[in-house]
Image 1 (cartoon, rainbow, N blue to C red):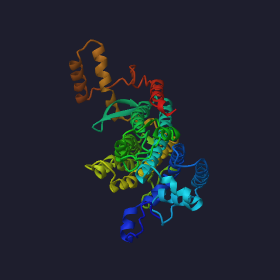
Image 2 (image 1 turned 90 degrees about the vertical axis):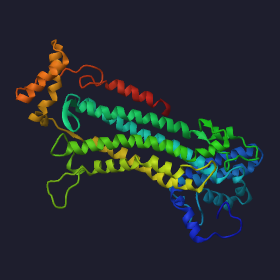
Image 3 (image 1 turned 180 degrees about the vertical axis):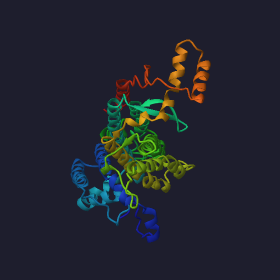
Length: 430
């Protein structure tokens, strides 16, 4: 069954090519398609296109379909192109002429738009919940290890004193920036496109404010052409937020892989959370973080992929948009899995301390020595030269006592301020 069936069969090769992965991907949209149909049916009854009895019958059958979806018993047959066709067939099979009325005043174009908007709203909140969990885990580790020194690097050269508290806390606060982007993405998708039909509205007297309220959207996408133009733009907005948090995770994963190596030896994990080698019996490989790094680097290419699919398309619907789902929806699942495994791994991280006694880390304190000389009245450039000459001549012997007190330094992590900052950034999720 095709909603656009006009009495002739389409070539099988063309059908297979054009349907693509819709039957599989639309299972994730099925719940939202039914919810959209419920709201649309209520509105059709209010404007006189359905009787009260017809609405009651449609609502009853839609609830049955929703229960099947929730229990995992819903599927999209090979006889249908997408979830919209399957749902309409089930309604028509049960209700006859009443089932056929559900499509009045809408197109598959605004059906898939409302499905995607509702889906993206829910997925944004789920991703942000994953970010929040990882954030709190990082802050917990930051406080627990705030007094343990970690070498800071620039150009991969030993540079200045850092701490595990500073390192964990840095990634926690970086996640707040990612949350701000998801807030923007949520605002973009929290607009009701239902009623835009094929992109140019309809002569039916639809009550679009009613469906906006029924579906829990924050506002209506008023202009029907603008509603259709949100296809692609919504996905790209969310993809940029996804790429941002993927960048944070990828960088953390790279640090972890580096710090786990024997050349650094700052971190480790229980044996059960690492993998081995088929030939080298000593190996404890950080495969989880290597895969997080690779998957998140892949995710950072998502905005460009979506841009290239939609770039230079004129207004109106185009079948090109179908490819957005094939790239976008699996990426959401991949990001959620990276957040979940990172959170899990950090619950078992082992922070080491003895490495800091190695003589090569004495150079971490060179700036400390310069600053002490400055505090004693020596101009900075003269102090810099003095310590540099001592290092060159082998006379450098640092005092390793640290006195960092300003906000955000290793002696003043501002953990509670960062926690409050995240709570403020998340105020739109409650």
